[in-house]
Image (cartoon, rainbow, N blue to C red; front, side, top):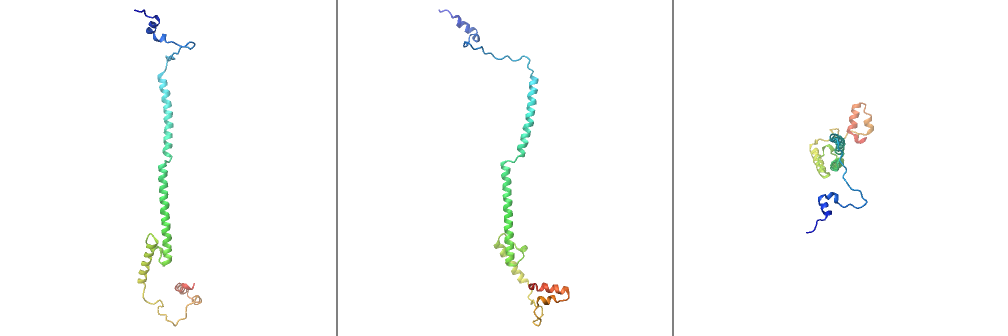
Length: 175
């Protein structure tokens, strides 16, 4: 048998010592751990840092909750648009109501409906009802044709102020 090589035997006995190292480089060794590490002090240090970061994280969370999100802003925008459309529709109904009231002579507060056609139909129905309820006696009230026509000057010559005001009201078309 062959004799064992002394270099191989030494490598097998202590592999850390026999690792070949390049010439000119220092041997690499792990830094030794300090013998007196105060683990409680380290734990307190990290706990203090964690608490400081917790306060900052809580402030960040509060700011995020206070800041509007895209969804909440979109919801507000939709609500504003709906309110604007509702106001626009109400203004359009009021405009149509006053237009129909002016055209038919029926007060706008009596008109019903959401569009001009329905308001016109309502105004016509109210006007027909009012015409049916009007008295059938003559508007002359028996004064006859003997009286001179009423003029503005004749009304102003009335001495009684109450009678003069009533005459003005009856003949408003002269004013």
